[in-house]
Length: 103
Image (cartoon, rainbow, N blue to C red; front, side):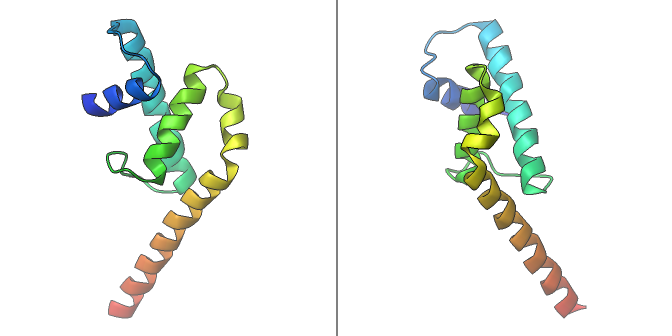
């Protein structure tokens, strides 16, 4: 995780002050969110640098985690999480088909 992503999420959460403990907590939430979203997508890597669905979901994951409402995240973002899963599983299936064609 890079510092730019941390700062972008802090900006999203309207945290404008510098505090080492808050930065450490937010960084932990970001790492857990990344792992969770990779698991949902069923892939080892997701791009959180580009403005895309996975980045938006990560921002909201951290927002919910920061508000101690993480148990509601999967409920409130169920359709977005399903879309993420289907998108990456469809890509994996297409890649597998392309490999079989070239074999």
